[in-house]
Image 1 (cartoon, rainbow, N blue to C red):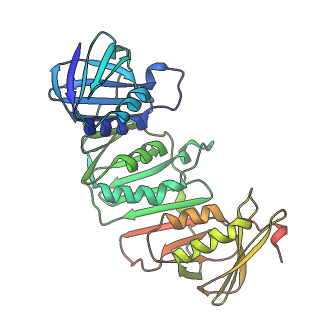
Image 2: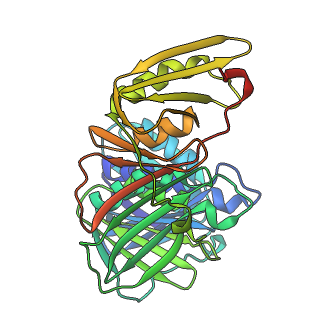
Image 3: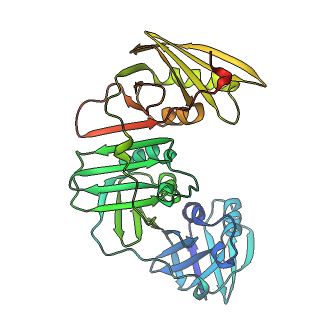
Length: 373
């Protein structure tokens, strides 16, 4: 038996949180359920897909303690439509009545014993990092995480925390992003490959304050506010990414970041839809951006920029380049190049020398004959 009263906004916030962990579809019906458990004067909500678990607690007036699992999407749908009044849960066995205002809903659930055992927070000392710092690192790197790559280690981001600082790296073989904060010295060692889902959930659910990060074995957890995300990490060694970062690129293109995004967005409309190829023709203080498609036609636009180096042409996947630029936050960028075959480094033009830095890298693409001049 279970009987309790909760505030509607608290309940909706909690369900919004745990619903993110529900699998879109599963052959295991109990994974589509949300676990409700009373704990003193709180209600704990949990959901899992066995790889990633989200647990959150909300205040509640508990008359009768208990636990039950209810269909997650249906419960979420019901609560979203309820008026902003207190919500009452009551019931025995596997049937719960949800009452709010003049409405009443009877929902069939399952015993909490049928729910999978939830991972617990490891007892290791956590690393405390400001939520805004960690969220910014995720935004600037997670776009480069590979999507279902056969190399499992590329399907996550490398999180490296130690007394030497904080670093996060992601690459899909075409792009690489790396944020380093040497000024943030932490007396905790974490070297883990974190899944894209766990990173996205944190970025979506976190607000402010600090996040406590714990790592042990094959499990990492992120604890903030009244919420905890627990995720399995990816096994394996991350590739030696520093080896692909060139250190002798001596041709610099400097321009306004938003201006380049705007030019790319327009020129991309005429790019080959399968390759998204954009060509840069680089000359002193002049950059011509060009795309062409056999079916659609072609586009040319001059980008207002400063270029220092010998003239040459280089091709990029326009989608990849735009994604890098959109996830940066500076006003002006510098693209450090060498030739049409060497990886290009993208930095904030005003980034000062120091222990904190951000670097993005993109591999050029071979220019197809269709847009060769």
